[in-house]
Image (cartoon, rainbow, N blue to C red; front, side):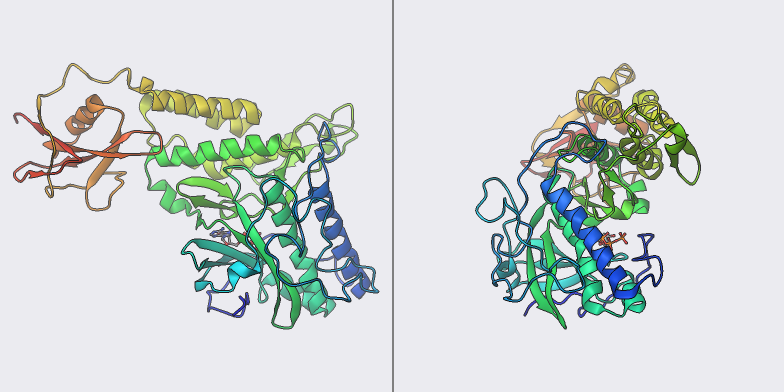
Length: 473
Ligand SMILES: Nc1ncnc2c1ncn2[C@@H]1O[C@H](COP(=O)(O)OP(=O)(O)OP(=O)(O)O)[C@@H](O)[C@H]1O
């Protein structure tokens, strides 16, 4: 059974996002719809073929991703009559580009065949335009399928305005196509991985596009605030690396016009951007700096206008300030190791004032990682006031737990430490702590996970753990 987005399974209500509405009112009916489709089509073509956009620096040619049917894994031939409709809008699905089937290098691998026997379809989320489902492939891997939401706001408002369901589908689908092109061209560990795509008939619409991507978990800010500083720092570092990549991408400096936590997902603790349909590469043209005002709800910044007539660094700085206001300010300083606070505060301040660019911001985030990972942040720890602990190799304490914050485990106190000395310091700082158990598990920075315990009345053998018990008191 082919997957029919919007028709199953039941899903909660959705709220329209701030994406642009499809058109400025009824300006010329279907001709206007065709004009909008063409504009989106041309944008997709630019991103799939082109090097940097105007104002974006040195040109570079890259292969065109295999955009359309006929690409790897796509099953059905192009319908015989598929050519530009008489209203002048481009044909759908789009024609394959020069680099398509058989071209070397990584590219989307999965196609319609992969979707034939998927199981356990579950609605994950939707926005203004698209709906996302989680499915399991026959091999067992879980992936995300993204398609235009047939009952979504974008399609609905277009149909109300133009009364042309197929044309409106194509208009919306060009957003998904743009996202697919950008996912492919901007490949990076912090850009969601595109596994493939499929064109298939769905409801009354022929050749609807479904993209197949890595599955993530939506970013929940409230949840993030309850996790360890180490995990929150990872998200900020991921974001710094992503913004650096976007600022130096083969297409030029890419800005995310719609930059909110919901445009990102978490994959194994790494932040990845998923929603790229509102990304833009073109820098803003200007005659003077008066044309280069970056506007945010709480404040504005005026950037310089370059001699070439482009607002300098506007794309990069828009991303950076958004990273500051949605992520850094909440996630970076809060409950950080005290010796890292000054550096973290300077990152928050400099991004909040836009005094640094993306390169400097990333360099400072990487410096924090180095200080943390190497244990240098521990230089002022209280080595002298340490109590005596007895080492019991190959053992653990199964119970005698207490809760602490921010524990990696709900009902117990599980924290990461750099070394034994830090574990002792943590135990000394918790009034309940009488013992701790060092596991062989590590966090993403390589720190060891340690359970802190209220006592050691029941110690049992465990080859993968080492227990330390307070000798007195
Ligand atoms: N690969 C994925 N794994 C898990 N969840 C995802 C994935 N991609 C997207 N989502 C979730 O689905 C929601 C909708 O996806 P997406 O943002 O692409 O749609 P949209 O219509 O462009 O949304 P918006 O109106 O915010 O622009 C997202 O907010 C995100 O939480």
